[in-house]
Length: 274
Image (cartoon, rainbow, N blue to C red):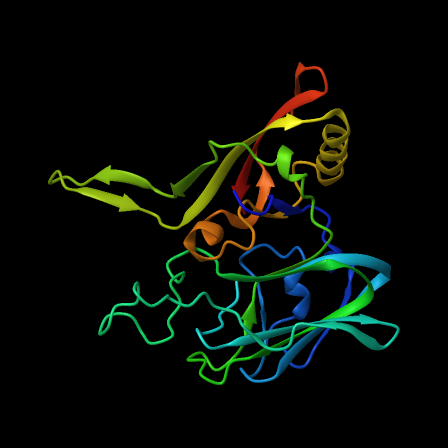
């Protein structure tokens, strides 16, 4: 594994005061609204969301989840403090581009994203911890077929991420749960009733020391079983591997730790996509 897993369990965006350059649906839908609701701007060019925090705080991540940007649409994230921009990504293409050698002439669109079959497409920014009192996110997608920008959820904050030697162990299991049920007709043919898919992710920390076990325990107890968190097992790897193992979820089982031997704990976890 490359980078250690990251999980935003305490979402600063949910407590922020939000404004948007335009809105067909409320920008507050990006805060704890469930995946049935989203913010939608009036246009697809130069649309902006501004979030002002309750108090100055350190953040090192912003995640734009469930967006409808095309393969050439851009996102620009700016951190704000006392009216000044203290960090600026500049406009960055949000999509993962199909690499040469994988791109198929006559089949795949030029510049097309290879993640469109996944349930939710998202864009994330990872930075050094920076003191901010707000941030703004600007979207620009002049080639949008929809003609507007849409975003489901936004996460920001300081993610939980263990030291590299205590990272998630091998054996990460990702289950695609196809919703609905199969029924036979009177003629004997088989039909699937219902639709949609969600993900269930199970993994294990097997080498946590005493201190890190305490940190993880406090993070999980603060979040609880009903809190929506953004979890990413393979951050910054890109492609389907990262995208498939990164989504908004809730804890799907009790939290338990086992003291395997001196200064070593294990902790299995399970998350279900919301």
